[in-house]
Image 1: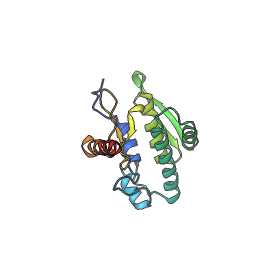
Image 2: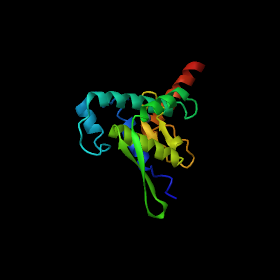
Image 3: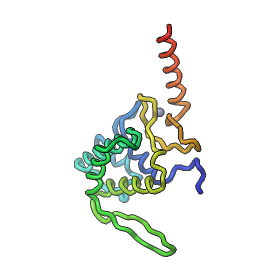
Image 4: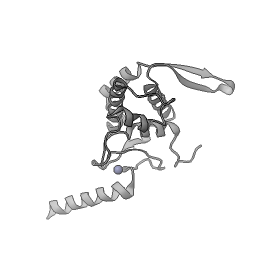
Length: 178
Ligand SMILES: [Zn+2]
C-alpha cells in the first residue's frame, strides 16, 4: 500500500487542471490560448496549440469538475450529468497485457478532455476521489489532495489559509459577542 502522504498521479493531473482557475491572487490561466498552453504543458501529450474552441470546452469542463468537487461528492446530479455529456465526446479503449494488467487509453476526441477523463476515472476507481477538495478559505479555493490519514484536511495549506481562516472566525465570534 502506498504511504498515505503520496498523491496519486491522477490527482496531480486533476490538481494541475483545476488550479488553472483564477483564485486568490492568480488570474485564470485558461483565458488565453498561449497561457493555457504553458499552464497545461505537462498534461499535453504533445506541445499542440490550444485552440479557442478547445479552451471554451476546457473552461466548461473545469467548472463542472469544480461543481462536483465542491458539492461534497454526493449531491451534484446535474453536475454529474453535465460531466457525462462532456466526457462522452471522447473515445476510450483498453490495452490488456500480461499478468492481468489493463490500461485505459484514449482513441479519439480532444486529447486534453481525454486526459482529464482518464484521471477522473482512475482516481474514482482507486477510491481516492473523496480526497480531492477545494480549500475552505473562500478567498483561496485552491484544489488540493488530502493525504492525511483522517481525510479531514480543510485548507490547501494550513500555514497560508488555515491560520487566516481561524483568525477570521475568531474575530467574527468576538465581534458578534461584543
Ligand atoms: Zn488555501
